[in-house]
Image 1 (tube, protein in one colour):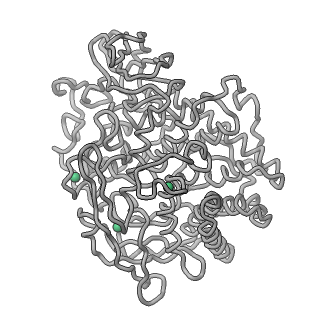
Image 2 (cartoon, rainbow, N blue to C red; image 1 turned 60 degrees about the vertical axis):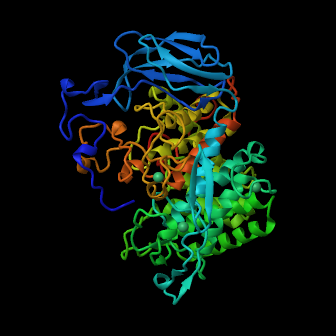
Image 3 (cartoon, rainbow, N blue to C red; image 1 turned 60 degrees about the horizontal axis):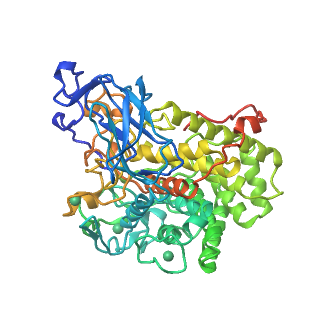
Length: 603
Ligand SMILES: [Ca+2]
Ligand SMILES: [Ca+2]
Ligand SMILES: [Zn+2]
């Protein structure tokens, strides 16, 4: 998250003529004129990591006429499936003219590629029940590499990835009105930079804890590459605890949480141990406090089984934070004037909903429920959601806690809006050849796309429908190459993966490939004017360039959303095809004040 993006004309990789609309003639060899620019031919876009046997399977390609395609088994070289792709058609977001090949009927486990009658071949992918396991391993390794304050040293694909203990100097308390300093060892570096932010940290860690809570059978004995592997605690919770322990250190004496612990400005492109800038506990905010309470109260519930003392510590901190929120009903924002690191000033209302929902789900105390239900009686699930608006986490905790104490009208209303939201997400995944449920494009929307799996998984838990599982699987596939570039947005995974993320360790270290398992933010047209790419549709506005933090930064909340989506896809192999569509089973009641309604709204 550097402040200035010095993008030169020559650096624009996707268009033939910088800033001006190129003519068809101006396209280079192997390029096509699409959507007002010269594009490298898509090849055959496919989820180049893998698909589970029962899920929808797609490939997308450009063609001068023939729509025929075959699926070839790598081991035998034999054609195992052939079909006719649907096209030509215009892709919903990229506006490319493409053909959509569906080979969902192929369910035999193995390694395959798709080829077209004009001789184009896709990347090799796996079909099988474990086809995404290695991707989950890598995405978890991505989180491990974000750990602050400890030595990191591991090998991946023959290269070494390492940084030394970092950010051990205590941080100043001057912004919170106290003398001296305090230690804040641990946690995760937030993104491409080395800051640590409570709003995003709490939001990010919630998806690891939720993954465990929603899919304990799958994750209980699932090990990942980390020092805590082999102990009695599930590894995904060990990784979560790294961040939770740091969040606990940001709580102030009055119960509030510091908004962030960062330097005054972003770091130079150095390894973290070489960043010795003075760091500061920034003044607290009610948004950070609400989010911290949500994450800690959730953790108190899930860690109870593995470490009662830690669970109790999390709960006490959450309750103390909630007491602060109760005493301060009006928004308090952090004073961030004296610095240029990430702001993370989000919505004020929904962190309080998340906090109360998790506290109630953990304690079942009527006071929390009364306050919560007063706040959510007109609420609906958001179609998609981001760090600034964690409401869906709270609504899911409320719906998943089976208690007669709940107001049945609110339960019915939220259940119906969740059904509608999931239904709309599925519809979006079918409308786009690349399976992308969301039509939003802004900074970090790859994270939002993955995060739609949260809505779909909770809906599937309540309604059980194959369509929701297919939609989840397609969101994952979109990250691994089923997109308008035919490339993977995750480092070292899938076809032609992103090579130059905005990620300081990758930029500063000696390894040629970036650190593995990191999801980048993806295409959108924010800041496109300064890059001279304003004539590109947002879905194709992406630069694989380290200095372009708008497109190519990595972030913990995007990676944990990817992890949640992978876990949900791997853990939920069967749907109920005979289940009625939620629309037929539930009707959406009008909210008392006429507001609300589910779906399509986004944020
Ligand atoms: Ca463990
Ligand atoms: Ca490097
Ligand atoms: Zn660090």
